[in-house]
Each structure stands twice: as C-alpha cells, then as structure tokens.
Length: 546
Image 1 (cartoon, one colour):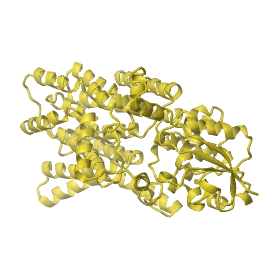
Image 2 (tube, one colour; image 1 turned 90 degrees about the horizontal axis):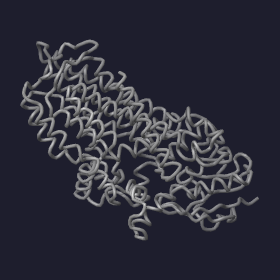
Image 3 (cartoon, helix red, strand yellow; image 1 turned 180 degrees about the vertical axis):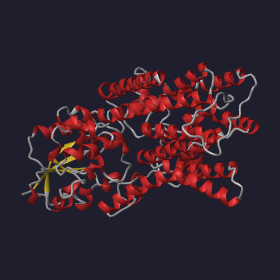
Image 4 (cartoon, helix red, strand yellow; image 1 turned 180 degrees about the horizontal axis):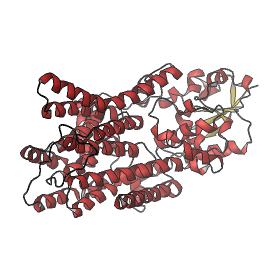
C-alpha cells in the first residue's frame, strides 16, 4: 500500500510539474482541454449559470471533475486562463494509470526489476507525460481502461463477482470520459460471456448459458446505465439524445466543416497501423509470441488485454476509415498499455490471487515452472527503448499533428527559420490572441450580458476573461432570444469569426450570415484582431447599432 501511494503521488507531482511548465512557460494548450475548462466555467459564472451549461456533445467527466477547482477562477483567473483546473484532473488520473500498470505486473508476479522497468517505461513515455500534463480526456480514459483490464485479468482466475462488477463500473465511468469506451464495453461483454460459458461447471447447456448471461449482464449493466442516463438527460434538456452525432458542434460536423477525414479506406488502415506502431512499437513481436505462449500454458489472461485495449484501437481505426474522427495520435494511446500488459504476460504467472469471494468457476492460475529469466530479459529488450521510438515519431506533423510542436520546446535551437519551425511556433502561440482579446474586453468595464459570442472558437476568450458574466454564450437559456434582438437586450458587442470552415457552425454566422463581412445591418465594425495562432480565426468585434 505504501509503495502504490508513493508511486501515485510521485507520478502526480511529475505530471503536474510538466503541466505547469507547459501552461505558464511554454503556454502550449490543446483546444479540447480549454473548451472543457470553458464548459466547467459556464456552470458557475456565465450570464445564466446552471449545471446543464456543461453541454451534451462531448463526454462530461473531464469538465465535471473540474467543478470544485473552477470556483477558484473567481479570484484567480489564471486558474482557467491557463487550464490549471484541467491539469488538476489529468495529472492524478494519469498517475492512477501508472499505479494500475504497476498492479497488473504485481498481480502477475513478474520479477521486481521487470515490474519497475515496465512501470517506468509507461510513466515516462512522452505521450503519457504530455497527456498527463495537458488536461485532456486521455488521462481519465487510460486510467479507467487499465483499471477495468486489471479487474478482468483477476476475474479470469478468481471468478470473483467484485472484480467483474468493478470492471463494469470502470468501463461505465470510462464512457463518461470518452465514447471509445463503448467499444471496449461491448467486446468485454462478449468475452465475459464466452469465458463463463466455456469454463462453467453447470451440468446442462441451458444452465451454463444462464450463468454466462448473468456474468455478461454484470459487466455490461453499469455501462448501459451510464449510456442511458447521459442520453436521456441530453434528450430531456436539449431534445436530442445523441448530440455528438446530430449536433452541428459534434465531431462529424466538425470534420465536414474542416474538410478532414480519411481519403480512402486503405489509406485510413495504413495510417492507423502507423499510429499504433508509434504508440506500441513492440506489438508486432509481442502479439504472436504471447498468443503462442498463452495457448501452450492454457493461460486466458492475455485475452483480456487484447480485447479491452484492442477494441479501442479497432474503434479508432474504423471511425477514421468512416470519416467520423480525426487523424490524431492520441486516439491510439491504448496501444501503449496493451503492449506493456502483454510484456508482463510473456513471463509465466506466479503466485495466488486473493479474492474477496471466489466464484464457482475459479481456477488456479496456469504457471510455468521453468526458468523465467530468458523471457524476462526478452520482455525488457522489447520495451526499454519504446519511449525513445515514440518520441522520435512524435516529431512528424503527419503522425502527430497535435504533439509535434513539442519539438520546438525540447530542441529550441533546431532548424531556425524553417517552415516546420514556423508552423510549430504558430501552434505554440495558439490562444494567445484570445487571451489578449479577453483582457481588452475586460478593460472596457462592460455590464453583464453585453457581449454575444459563440464558443466554437470563443472558448479560449471565455476561459481568460476576468468577467465571464459579460458574455452571452450558447449554453445560456436565453441565448437565442438575445441573439435575435441584441440591441433590445442591451448587447453592445458581437464577437464574430469568418463564415468558413468551423465558423459555419458559429451561431452568430448562422443567424446573420453576412455579419463578419458587413455587420448584417445590425452592427458596425469596431475592431479587427489578427490571430497569431495556427488555424485560429481573425476576430472582428462589432458594435451593435442602437
């Protein structure tokens, strides 16, 4: 217990330190992280504060977890402007994932030196360092996926209902972190049904089927409840159950607006395989080797990792091939824990797993009494260099479009004046213009509800302002009414973005298609703000007539 606590707090401190450097020194943020901060801030500090302001398009866990710390932004705006509240969520979650990787190896009974090597390889992997430090949803998702996998691995030996239920709860919470968890939940449910049916000691086929069905329900029910409650709440409040699919702010709409998506199925498959190789470079060797050893040992434990993590990778590949998601490296991060768990499982299991209550189908672990040193050495060789391999490919704008700007921080003197360095510098400067714009509007001393702005691009303005109640945003219940008659509701300014790309989903553009170009006869141009960030719009501030 003391070891895991020390590991957790050490990892949390490491990711927090990296995150504070990225936030306050490098000032490097990802938009999804800041947008969750903005969603959390609207709950307490918008012109119309309410819990539903958190939104129903993206999963709520990351924003909900920030609610206690976002209150601090009332006194210290930097907490939201620099995404400190998001960091306070991702750092402990990723530290929890480190602990789960450690516990999976401890449960397996691998040699102590290998246990710590694999744990360090995970904790210090550049992807883990970055996503533990930047407030994105990857940290809670990876933790919950690893927690679920560990409990399912234990269940294959103990048949303990507590392990099974906890695995289901982890997947349910994982769904609230990332929709990808549905793929893992469906695949895991099938696996649990099959394992229970095949090893059941019930005398008849019907009774074996019944027992398998009960176990499958135990692991699937928490996920179903989470899905139903979230979808029903969305329908109750917005009239749409699956806004991620149907909303003009969802991924599919964003891809269409941005002209993204895979060019063809074969290209998507090749890209997904390349991304998987970047995050889990030893998998091509590990998967067939571990599969052969598991078959020889009659060891079912490797099935869990292949199904739980592999289904997430398959889901990322499928959705990219269908044009429903972006070519982002982070969507393939599950390959890393898959690789490391399989590394543990190269080595024969040792020891007995203790259970709170062993089930009727519990089975002794299949152990190999041979010399474990050669396999332990092979495991070490396969994974020891993987952080270096991942870091090398993260310098590619094609394979790592969201991460490759980190090279400019790690190697500040490399390639000065090159097009690549200019692009990286532009990425690092993203959202600085929005912070300056927020400071300018704050300096005007405007009354509450006097600036209309959509958060499609304006989330970074909203996180940086010292007076969030100044803004009328789409989560306000009276937003449409105010947008239809801004002058009649005391609105003084409208923040506008070009009506192209993602700007086509901006509510001000949909209501007033000529606003950005002409003011749409309701406003006059007050100020144009060029943007220094990559793929960020040139803002125009319009003064409302009347």
